[in-house]
Length: 300
Image (cartoon, rainbow, N blue to C red):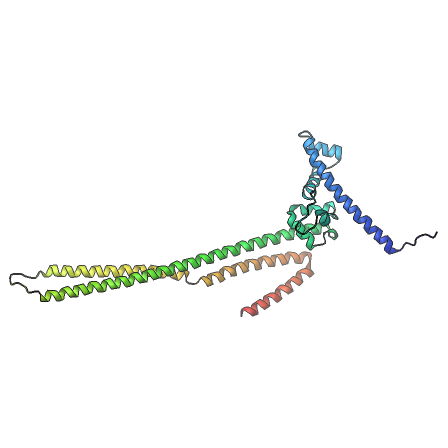
């Protein structure tokens, strides 16, 4: 019976199987150790935990803490909305690769695992990926908050414009009413004067010019007071309307301020990326430049 001929493909396949099995065994071991450390912590007398870790197990407190955190995060092996268990997504990761993922909720860890080949990445690369992801999430949240704030301000401006327009309508109606009242008063005065001319004057009655002039002055004062009040209300309404008349310009100004802020943060992010990944940063600069050129042409 001749020996089986072994070639490079056969040997490579065996290496990959052994490597993947070793990763899975290590992943399971880390979780099992972490679960038992959590159990042991409740059993060790108070004040002796550090001594127990170092003298009995040979672990530093920080190493033990990381094992317990990994166990708390990955021991459930739940199946998410993506239909995959935690073993499927993270079972090939080593101890150092798992640590950066502990700072993320399960849903976000799954998102990174779906979009990146985590097993092929170093712990440093995964740590950088998590850091960039958190920064992007924070920037998106900040942009959403600023957008909501701008929308709220625009709605307030539109409401102020509506109130100012209503006030202007009310004051205009008040002015018309005052003018009608003045007209009515003038008509009454004219009628009284005409009636006075038709009433026979007894010889013994002498017209009191001072009383007549006082009555005329009272009418004039009332007319002037009504006109002055109407003009003051109209002036106040015009001032309110002038402040709220251009909500679209206010909206553009707020959005422009947001764009300036985001542009500054984008420039800082590109500068940081250029220090570690110059080629990637240059690609981003080219893409962003093309985008801004097209946007500039579309806005002309």
